[in-house]
Length: 433
Figure 1 (cartoon, rainbow, N blue to C red):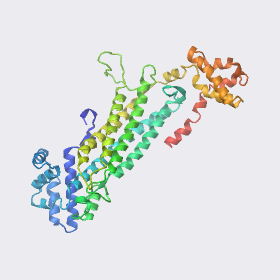
Figure 2 (figure 1 turned 90 degrees about the vertical axis):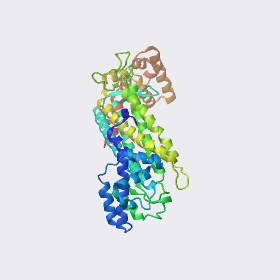
Figure 3 (figure 1 turned 180 degrees about the vertical axis):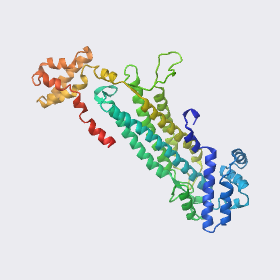
Figure 4 (figure 1 turned 60 degrees about the vertical axis):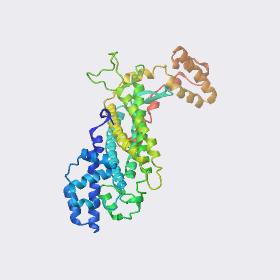
């Protein structure tokens, strides 16, 4: 990803320096295991660690070798041999390139997942704090973009909290699924490398053992990981879209923080645009775009091919770096979000009480009127409000069909906002415990 949408911690996981360091550690741990099994001399394993542990791998040198040999792992091993010396002949013994590449990819994805989980925790904390702050801040709910019934801004944020909490659970599961180690040699049969080598490397690298590989780790694992990121990205977009709508001038119930010195338009000095959430909407689309290539990588030829390789070299860093940036940006948006309760009340009152139409409908039905007839009576008065901006309660009080069954006090009781807030605490207990 370009630096504009990247955080250094996420970028570092995918840097050449990190990649080559992980490659070395895998090879060195494998050498340790082979030495324990008597496959190679213990002194050779010791030398490999001694020479390579603090070595600064020359990226330009590795690139130069790769331009000649056209193979990235061989280029690295050639350079490592220049560092280690004669004992390098015991490096990579019985192993294949995918043992190194796939296990490294697992380490990088697991580390990236840890960053993403931290970002989700930050976002969840911000959502919980603001949800509790606005638990009883009344606003109008909307369906199809049209006023529906009263809700609270805290409930909107609590719903987002629950959604991202589910996303976190999915990511924990996806991290576990992706964090496997394969040191099984050509076509995955362990013909030239003892399975105990895989067990040792897996333990040292903080991974589980891949129970069966076909020279490569099965790509259904990776497909699930990137699909999980795609779902989380959709949640990012859903919340961002909500904020964008609420910031519209005609609504203005919530607004991104506008910092001193910030400018919204090169032409119109008055503008305060929802640029952060618009940016997040775009980044979410980008993360979702990586899901299909990850799924298409599952179907490799026979025991392996490298059609997945070019895809993963792009989507591995790009998807995780983008997701990391998005989660941290969204946490900041929620933490600093400006909320305008007075505008929420103004918008709630805009249709003269129409948002209580269901309350009236239910009361007429309870008083004995057939539901279809009650719906007709309530809607008839509601349409007058849309057309004339009359006061809905006054229209209902004057309606003879309503008056037959309901007193003015009965009608007034239907306009009690507290009825819509009665279960807020129950919902919050379900979400937050």
